[in-house]
Image 1 (spheres, rainbow, N blue to C red):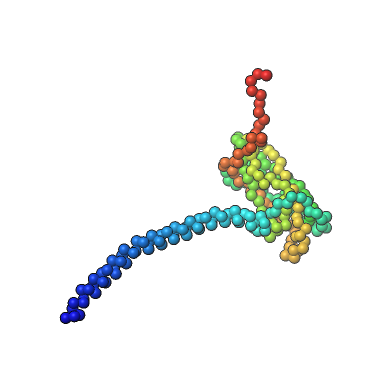
Image 2: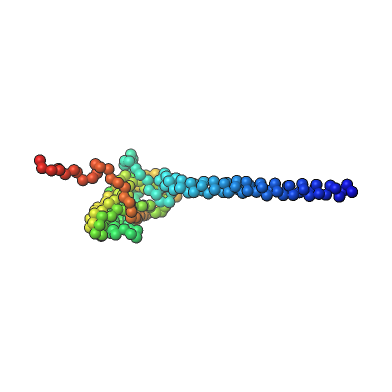
Amino acid sequence: MTNQAEAPTTQVEDNSKVTSKVMARPGRDATVAGLCGLLVALMVGASYAAVPFYNWFCRTTGFNGTTQVATSAPSSAPLARKIAVRFDANVAPGLPWKFEPEQTEIEVRIGEVVTVFYTVTNQSARTTTGQAAYNVAPLTVGAYFQKINCFCFTEQTMAAGEKREMPVVFYVDPKLAADSENDGLNTITLSYTFYPVREPAAKPLAASEPDKPKGNL
């Protein structure tokens, strides 16, 4: 008799536990959803942060053939060792420009400051703007290829039919000669690709045309 009386009580307790689990599930699901949302936000933020970090890393180390920016010529005299530098020019789809080097290849001494020119022609009937991306090959030479001045540092805006010479001032760092991995290096290729700029950066007022006299003097 005692066992039969206790059975309903046990069943009620079991039902209470099931109800508690069902009521607790929405809260647990909300927590999981919140954590998943936070993880997605962190991943998106990391992807955006990775772009400037990657660019900084390439500029600092020369990784992936990214050339370096120098503020002056090397302090030491050029070395006797010579190396050939080839020049490559490309234009991405959507930019109606003709772009080519004035010389396809020159021979320079390591440490010698050299100026070369590229020629750019806007073949369209409207003003267009482009920005040049660049690298050198072999990719490991990027850390030793120093550019003092280059059209690739800024956006270039060309009037309809305009033709322009664009200089590049560079030298090959003498430190290259101390790198045993480049003992057999004879040729470096400097490559540029111009890409269209849809929304050019606004020019400051001082860079615009001078004010014209207004009214009669």
